[in-house]
Each structure stands twice: as structure tokens, then as C-alpha cells.
Image 1 (spheres, rainbow, N blue to C red):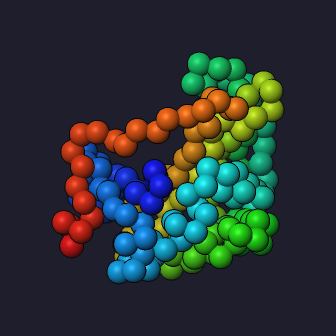
Image 2: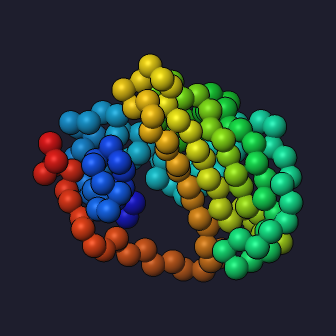
Image 3: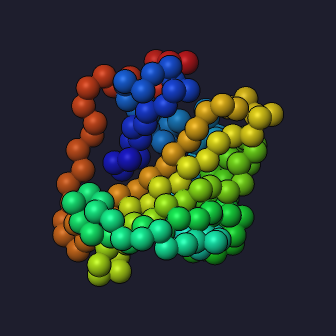
Length: 170
């Protein structure tokens, strides 16, 4: 996400080979399920805040990850606990996003976290699958955040390749 423009890939859109893009502020008016994305959830710290709902996290050892030596932790994040622990300005947006997942039967996520030698979280990966009674049953969803050059300016470029506007798909 850059400003209010979102790019995503999903089998739900028929292909993982193309990027689907939309302006979150415009899309939220016609697709309320997208509303949570624009309410602080796009803040890179939000993925860290989800860890407040972590349960049963265990040290899985030291490994080379993205060219660095890191400690890997695995466990589960309970989304209801994450909402309760979210900063006040992000709580509503976090709840909206998790409400959308709850309608698919998702209330928690298998979580993997990589921490560098200085104690900084460098990558978080949440994996979950909608329940069998959901229209999205059978899909596997992964949300991840990679935290790069800590303390340095960052330039984010939009994806290249096959890009389609969400409005053109409906």
C-alpha cells in the first residue's frame, strides 16, 4: 500500500500472475469489507501489534533468513486478544478487519516471527484458512510483513507487470 493505493494478488481474483489495484478510500464506499485496510491496518506497525494476541509462541531455533542469522519463533495469534491489545487509534480498524475474517470462520492464525541478533522483529508471517462452511473454504491465506532497513529512509515502488484495476473486474 502506498498512500491510499493498494496492490494485491489473490487466487480469488482468478490469478496469482497479476496485481489487482484499487484506491482504498474509493473502494471502501462500495466494498465495506475493505474499510479496515484504511484505518491504521496499513501502518507497518499493525502486524507487530497483532503479536499482542500471541499464544504458545516457542523458540524454533536459529537459522539463516534473508541472508542474516535470526531466531525463529512459531505459535498462534488469537485475533480477539490482538484487537483488545491494539493501540486505541487502530482498535476499530483492527476489529473491522478481523470481523471480515471471522465471517469466514477465522479467529486465529499460525504465526512465524523472525528476530535479528539486535532483538528487532524482521519478518512476521500469519497463515490461516477459512472454515469449511465459508464461501472462501479451501483458500489458504498468508499475510506477511518484512521489516527492512531499520532506521533508514525507504522508497516504495508500485508493483510492475500485469496490473488490473479492481473496478475493471466488477
